[in-house]
Image (cartoon, rainbow, N blue to C red):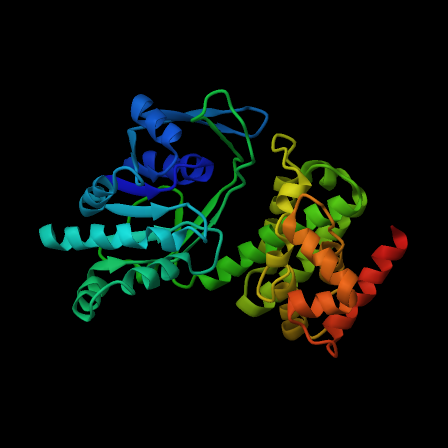
Length: 385
């Protein structure tokens, strides 16, 4: 079986490529990084090391790579022959591969009627749907009808912490032991891909929100509270009793609305929260708070990991959160000069006050209790600094 995987970075190799190999696939990586592509073709294997006391190491074999910038025609040929296509390239890059996907699918229908599933494994909601949209924009009406029945774009939710790292062996990747890959089964075309480690579900949105508003929310808050308390890394932040209490309190709030909204088992969700907190505390993953906290404007967005759970808590539970609002306030205080977005947030606060910044970045209205609560928490944090 052949899997074509876009993205030969640490997540692509350490997470998706690892699972594909151990499920019996030959994996053809597609990337523009000449060094990594050449190394994969030279060695045809690489090592994955677990970030835990045992430092367990596994070998991922039966791999090769194509440089899509230099040899796009080879990518097209690979897609035409593939049994599965996956991606781990980042939400902003996803639309840029649409042309290659289109050309590959056109070549495929010319030589075969075999169905194919394309799964975007990105840290976003609806990655595969976005890719399908960009692909179908480039098709004729006749092609759309033909492709829709033959090619599936099932959305997925992925979760594995792969820290920033510089290794002497350029192909080696260190990853945390925990991972989760959830795929929406109804959008699968043809037979369901058999991959050890995938969980197929009928409805994906509950699992996406569970991950986004537990893992992503908690990770971001550990960073913003860590920065506020002058701590350098996420694992050190979680050793600080003040920070760990604030992060856990936030996840209990987001968990309360998730359980009520989607019917998750309350005790199971509490176990999930505890597992996430343990992951953040992993001493074998050293992640700087300024890396995790980067791009605060995006993270303060109305539908992202800070504001959305606070708003949904208010709507679903019927009261105002405290910890989540304090987390939003901490994000507004993030003034790291090496982050362009952080600089912009601070300039907006200087020019228009914190109220103007809240309205600009969160899109909350000043008369709402959430808005007023953020202002109150911000003023408290400022007074205690």
